Length: 436
Image (cartoon, rainbow, N blue to C red; front, side):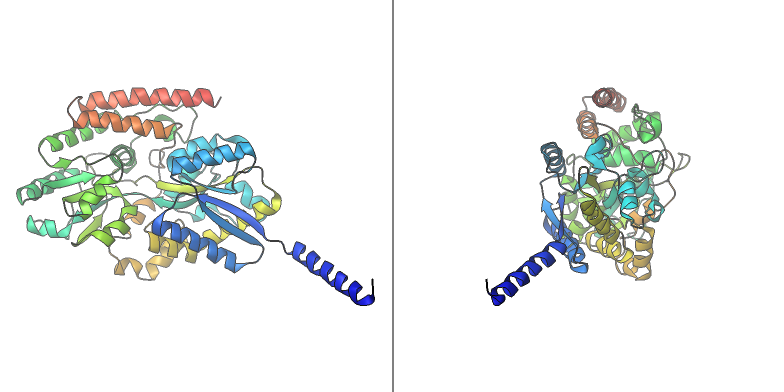
């Protein structure tokens, strides 16, 4: 080999070595966000990837929440799980019981040397994803809560003050009656009935949904949503349905379309519905806190968390975990959180992001966008941190079935809630046996 060939060979080796030294660590992020929200997830990854050269986050849509969770579990068993998995809140207890399959966030951030303070997050959000020792297990991401939407044009037509939405359930009943008289075929409806009318209802009134701190403080909770207060509320709703004041329109978010189409004048549902309502409603609408019963001590307290968090899967290398930690630090920046909150309608997850948004004048320019935040930034109680149960997906399905039996008149409120508690406790027993 002549000296020129030798130089070329050495140069090539140098380039290879340099390339190896600068190899980018790839981070797989499985999520369940579609449409505009999926675009925002991709934008977050692109923004992080552009901010540094060592790591590359790759977002991958893996179907609905239950589908992506099942796929990740199968992938972990096969040895090729993603680094980050977006999990809906009802899957939290299942992920907590996953052992080595997950890497707790507090441990990840500590080992990676990244700054991390759970107290920086909105209390009602952070509390849901922490263990009994206050250590955060997953990173809050797309969090929502329950709010009240109302059609201001319909209120005016009914002789109601559009600047004064009903604050109590009694006031809502009165408003519904006037709306019906004025011609509304659907005065009031609700999305996510189990989440809104029982889970969030409980935290809003500072009463237990289940024992052991709604499942956050123990491994064998019992359901308690058949108390006199819960029976009273579901019984009231059953009567409203008979009187034509309440319309049942589906278990999940189907009722939201009845609101933004103008058919229903009042709606309780997820704060995350705001984007769709803004895009589709051809009328002026308002956003307000959930109604409550003023004779209940401690009400209103705070509403319950919904949405999802980011879990870190186990079995990865130190460089990979370092990349995940860096990405989580990026996601927690006040400016990143503020932009996410303002563009998606999800809650700002840190108090700093809320303050940044407030000082920017965003809430004044977009009335109603701060209602969900104000319901969640208060200090939580044992009853209001949220509901974290095993087999929660199955329990919600049971609650939906039993509530439907109340709506169609097959059961009284007491009978329906008693049956839901009994069947739900059986699911908790199954989960307990499977995770001993």
